[in-house]
Length: 187
Ligand code: HEC
Image 1 (cartoon, rainbow, N blue to C red):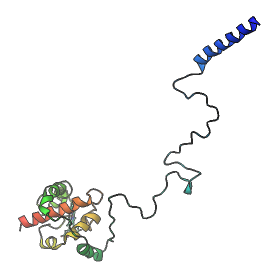
Image 2 (image 1 turned 30 degrees about the horizontal axis):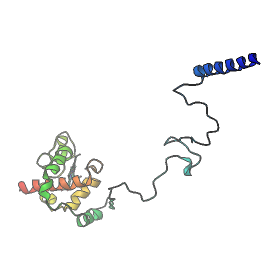
Image 3 (image 1 turned 180 degrees about the vertical axis):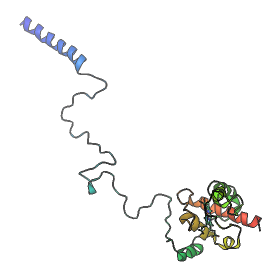
Image 4 (image 1 turned 90 degrees about the vertical axis):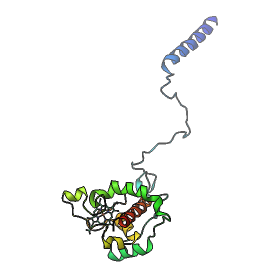
């Protein structure tokens, strides 16, 4: 009987020692009995997925979704829509003089390379052979409505590329305020 008890205690101690060396590792989860779906399979965003529509993990946004603070525009690249833009897109800046500083900054960064420092259409890129734009100080440009210039910046215009991805809406209006100022200051 004594012998049996000794054997039992010895085995328990041996098991404890063994489990200390083998079982417990702080880097790994311990043995788990019946986890009851505590963990589910994590799918990566751009991987196939048998459970979701189209068999893909990342779902398309609902039709007609627009990003927050984004206002869609509905104009086509036609002469008719260019004129309509002049009627429908109105400059929201009540006091344009407040936006001149910002507008000038945008102009110097994005427009000056072609349109030149004073808007005459002789920027650096043009001196290297890019088709020259008409002077922004000419009568034709002066007569363009703010909305039409907004349209030109947003969609591009013949030889001029679109700047909609570089210049956000409010900055487009600011640069228009600045162009008006240029036109006033140089008759
Ligand atoms: C890569 C050169 C280039 C850049 C940069 C550029 N433009 Fe132009 N822009 C042109 C050209 C070229 C035209 C003439 C388009 C044509 O008739 O083929 C033009 C035309 C225009 C017109 C119409 C002028 C008119 O009388 O018909 C406006 C307004 C205008 N640009 C504004 C801007 C503004 C504002 C920026 C900056 C956000 C800008 N452009 C940046 C090349 C450029």
